[in-house]
Each structure stands twice: as C-alpha cells, then as structure tokens.
Image 1: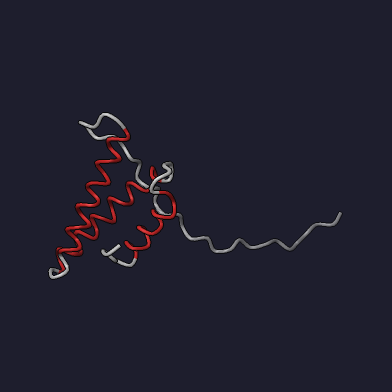
Image 2 (image 1 turned 120 degrees about the vertical axis):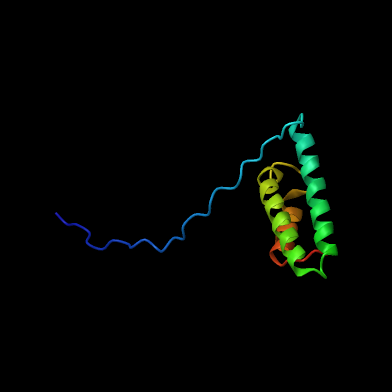
Length: 103
C-alpha cells in the first residue's frame, strides 16, 4: 500500500473580520424602503457635515467615523438594489477609504 506522505500545508489565512451588522428597521419606520431612504439621507447629512469640518480635525475624525459606520450598515442591503448599483457603491467605499469627502 502506497501512502502519500506529502501534504499541502495550509496557507496562512487571515482571521475573518467580524460579520457585517444586520440592518434592521428602526421603531417608527414602516418598511425597508423607508428605512433605506432614511439611511441615505442620514449618510448624506453626515458626509456634508464632515466636508464642512475640515478646519476642525477632531470633529472631522468623529464625522468620518460616523459616516464609515453608517455606510457599513447600509452596504449589505445596497447590493440587492439596482440603484445605486455595485459600481457606485464601490466608488463610495473607495472615497471613504481615502477619506475623500468630495465624491
């Protein structure tokens, strides 16, 4: 009987990131479409405030964190919608990664 003594060593696999937050409908919201619209409005408001806070680094960092968190909560559901679509969502994600408020 011949046995194979060469075994492939598994490549170093990075630990998986924590699972994305599960979007939920908040009290007072009646549908997923309403919740989606409200979250886009909230994200737009935070990004506009972040854009205007460039003279105040501590406020700018806090608003960036809030925008990043809001977008992270939204991105799971956005892949299911035709608009804005994966291309525009990727552009927003790239802009956030570069801390670019001008997109």
